[in-house]
Every structure is written in structure tokens, then in C-alpha cells.
Length: 177
Image (cartoon, rainbow, N blue to C red; front, top):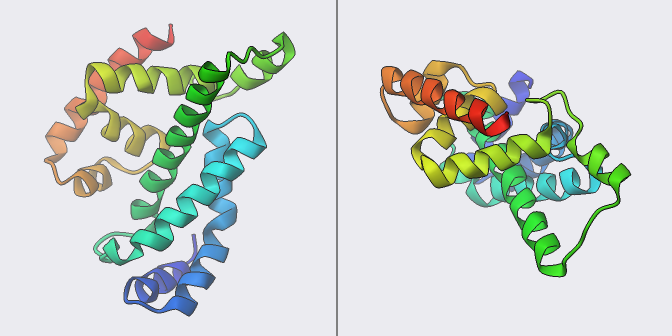
């Protein structure tokens, strides 16, 4: 992201509605791209993108400017993509929907951990088993924040972040295999 996005985020956090509108237009392509990394269908990624942009608009006043805007934004995006997946999965289960084989294959093909669907399923399992490990994994491995940025975002010591990421990755490997 560009330096002007940082300026816009600061202005929007201080209540400047025009800056917020411009900020949302500027970040939309990046937010959509990041949602698309997790969600296999463009329509699903677009839905998650809209949810993420809505969350930014609603909660921009929580951005204090102590870190980069992207450090604040990317967890919002990852969480919205995961939530969209959960909603779609629940809706499909309620309707008894079964995808044809070619759709299933398309939905599971990805360069992230072998498959996006498998990754999202593994994160759901991790959340049920060890919820404290999910946020560090999402921030580090999906949002690509540095270890110090993860520690800052979560308000926990760096050593705790490293331990949780290590433990989370170990469990994720078992869930993905």
C-alpha cells in the first residue's frame, strides 16, 4: 500500500468522511485480492471483500495509527473471509447442497497449504481445539505480518507469539494431512 493510504487512514480515523470514502476505494482491489487467496470463487471473495470494507468503515475510529494501516487491515480481511466461508458452509449444509465433482475440485485447488478449503477447515478445527492459536496463525501466515507486528496487534509478548505460531503450525499440519 502507498503512503497516501496511511494518511487517508489517519484522516478517516479522525472522522473525515471524504478521506474514508477515498480510503475504501483505494484499498478495495487489495482487499479483494486477499479475500480471493482464501475463497475459491470470485463471488465469495467479493462478498467477503464487501464485508471487510464495511468493517473498516464501521471501525476505522479504532485505528490509532500506532502501527501501519495494513497491520490493522489485514486481520480484518482474513477474519471476514473466514466468516464468509463459515456462513456459506453452514448455508450449504442446511440446504443439503452437494457440488458436482468438477466444482469440488475447483473449490479445493490452491497454492495455499495445498487447498484453501482444507486450510479453512483446518483453521476451524484449530479454533475448536486451541482458539488462542488461531489469531497468531492468521496474522502471521495469512495476513503476512511480522512476528513483532503480530505481538503488537495481539498485545502479547513476542516469545508467546512465536510459541503459539509454532504450536499452531504443528496442529495445522496434522489437520491438513
